[in-house]
Image 1 (tube, rainbow, N blue to C red):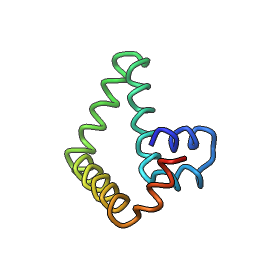
Image 2: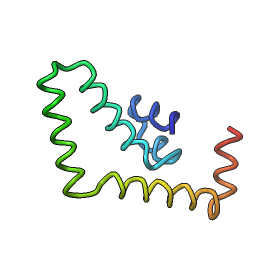
Image 3: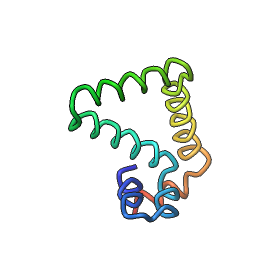
Length: 89
């Protein structure tokens, strides 16, 4: 997922999504965390409160975790040859 995220940062969407479909989610999460780390306290608290409201209404954390697990299982069980080629390089 690290390589896919680096491809996203460079603007290479196709390569990034080929490596890992959840890379955009990771990039967004890192962006929110970075913003909260460097922003003034009142701004970061507002963002954290909004994220909490979104999560409590949608359950997005559970959905993303479930999707990530299913994606991992599919890559390991169904697409083994593709996964092995990615690891080898």
